[in-house]
Length: 193
Image 1 (cartoon, rainbow, N blue to C red):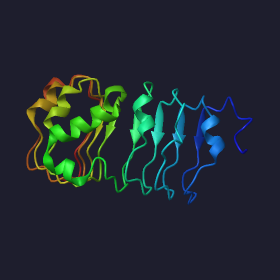
Image 2 (cartoon, one colour):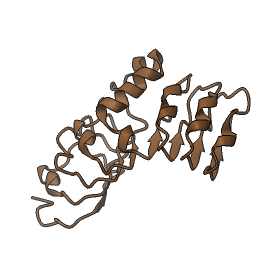
Image 3 (tube, one colour):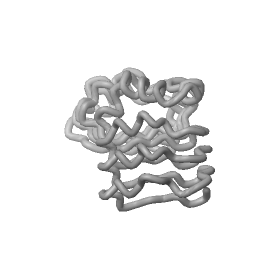
Image 4 (cartoon, one colour):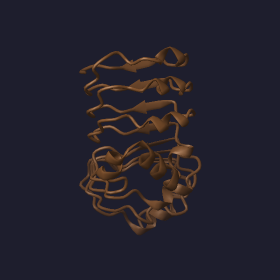
């Protein structure tokens, strides 16, 4: 097995390799903290992350994933999950269109947002910022770039732990109100609106 002897491996980057499957021995890498499998051809990553409870950063962006691995829900150390550019059926476009409560419900069900300090929902064709996300006041980085959002709610100002906010490449019609409450904000990206 490819990974049998790599029991101390903490970081792996196999991005840009046209991979569609990982070796079964990948599940033996229980010490992994950082995993980048972006820009490949994965249609599923189910059971790949079983037992990997140390994971803090995962990048599965730009694959062909329709669902996120259920195992992410058990990764309590997860700080950052990047999944842009996938045809995710869960959450589906319909869930995004139903409204913010549906998005928040999905995040709670999968148990990702409760342990994630970085939330990226870029390139999702969102037209409305899910106001209920403001309840997740522990999030430090919020990336809603490359969507179709026209206005930001004042409730965004209650997310006091935010240090980075990216709403670039949207359709904002006015300068967002309520940002004065974001005293920890060090980066604000509003270009191309």
